[in-house]
Image (tube, rainbow, N blue to C red; front, top):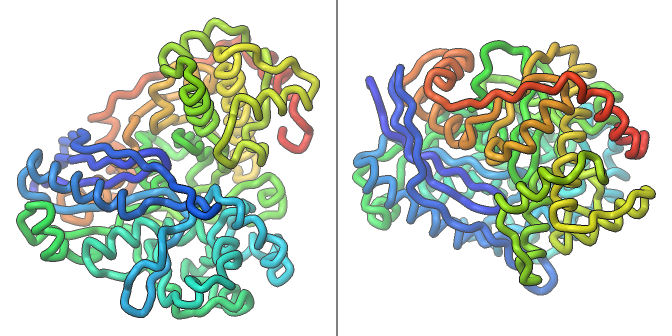
Amino acid sequence: MTGGTFAAVDLGASSGRVMVARVAPERLDLHEVHRFPNRPVRTAGTLHWDVLGLYAGVLDGLRAAGRDGGRLDGVGIDSWAVDVGLLDDDGALLGNPVHYRDARHATAVPEVHAVVPADELYRTTGLQHLPFTTVFQLAAARRTAGFAAARTLLLVPDLFAHWLTGAVGAELTNASTTGLLDVATRDWAWDLVDRLELPRGLFPPIRRPGDRLGELLPDVLAETGLAGPVPVTAVGSHDTASAVVGVPASSDRFAYVSCGTWSLVGVELEEPVLTEAGREAGFTNELGVDGTIRYLRNVMGLWLLQESQRTWAAAGLPADLPDLLAAAARVPAFTAVVDPDDARFLPPGDMPARIAEACAETGQVPPQSQGETVRCILDSLALAYRRAVRRAAELSGRDVEVVHLVGGGARNTLLCQLTADACGLPVLAGPVEAAALGNALVQARAGGVLAGGLPELRALLRATSDVRTYTPSPAAGSAWAAAEGRLSPGRR
C-alpha cells in the first residue's frame, strides 16, 4: 500500500474528536471531521462518564470520516486512562463507568495498601500513587451488585473497540495505567490480582499497539455508511502514549509535556526506573509504543483553567480564553503561585475560590481578578513542569536538551514561553493534535503504508508538522528558583 486514509478517534476528558489522516511515506495530512462534548453526569451522588453519548459521537464521526475521506483503510481509538466498563455474562455494559474524579475511589486506598504495601505496588507496577487508579476503583466497587455481576472489564478505548468489532482485549499502554499490570513481564500482575481477591476472569487478553483487533461489524457499517471491510487496529490507546509517538523529536535527549486537561511531563526510556526515590517523587513508568517506557509525572494541567472558566461562565462573568490570556499577560509574574497537584483541585467545583484559599494558606495575597487567577495558574503550571523535567532527568539519568510541548496547550503562547523560561530550555510547541497523529502513524505502519520505528515516524512528523520554538530568557532562572521556594519543600 503506497498511501492510506485512516480515522483517528481521540477521546479526551472534555471532548472527543474524529480526525481523518491521509498518510504516505512523504505525506501526513490530518484534519478534524467531527468534534463532540464529553460531559460527565452525576447521578445519585456518583460521577459517571456518558459512554453511550460518546459512542454516538464516535459513530457520527466515522460517518463524517467516510463522507470526507471516502473509503477508510483503518480506525484506531485512544482515550484517557484508568476508567473501566464492566460487562455481564451477555456482554452488556453494567452501567456507565464511574469517573476518575469521583470521590469514592480514594476510600479504597487504605484497604489496598493493607494487602499490598505502596512500595511493593510500585516495584511491581511502576506506577505513581494516584487515588483513582483502576486498582483502587475496583477495590471500591467490589461490594456493589454491579461488580458481583461483572464477568469482563474493559478500559474505555477497549470498550469502544468492542462495540465496533466485537473483540475483547486490553491494549497494553492503557492497561499499564491500571496498577494491575506487571511492568517487567508486561502481563497482568496475577499475584496482585489474587491477593486483592479480584476474579482473574475479569481481565481480558493483552493486545499491543499495531495488533489488528478486527473489522467494523455489519451494524456499524450500516450505521456509518462506510464500505467494508474496515480494520480496527490497536494503537497507543492511552492518549498520552499516542501523543508521545506524536512528538517530533530528532534525538532521545528530550522531555515532553503532553498538555491538555492533564499535563503529563517526562522522558522516554527503554527500561523502567523502579527506585524508591522515583516513587517518593511521584514518577510513574507507563508503557509506550514499541516497548518504550513513559517515565513521567502527572500534573493537574489545564483542568485548573477549564474549571475556572466554567465557574466564571456559570456566574455570568466573561470566560473567553483569548481575553483571559491577554489579561494574564499584563499581570506581573509570580503575583501568586500554588501547587497544581494539591488534592483540593482534583474534583469539579469553584476553582478560583480554591486557588484563593491555597494562596491564603501559604501567606500570599490571593488573586484579585480573573487575569490574576489565570496568571497564577499558568505560572504554577510552568513551575510544576520545571520541577518534573529536572527531576525526570535526574532520576532517569537521561540528558534533556529540549522540551517538546504537545497537545492543546501548544496553542497557549504565554504558557509555552513561561515553560521555556522556567525550564531554562528551548520549548518546541506542537503539534496540537499529537495524540491523533500518533494514533494515525501506528495505524499506517500496521497497514504497511509506513515502515521503521519511532525515529522514522517522527522524521515524517518533523517534515510535515508546524512547530513553534520558544527560547528561554537568560535572566529568568533566578526568578523561577525564588518562586519555587514559595511552595512546600516536598513539592520542589
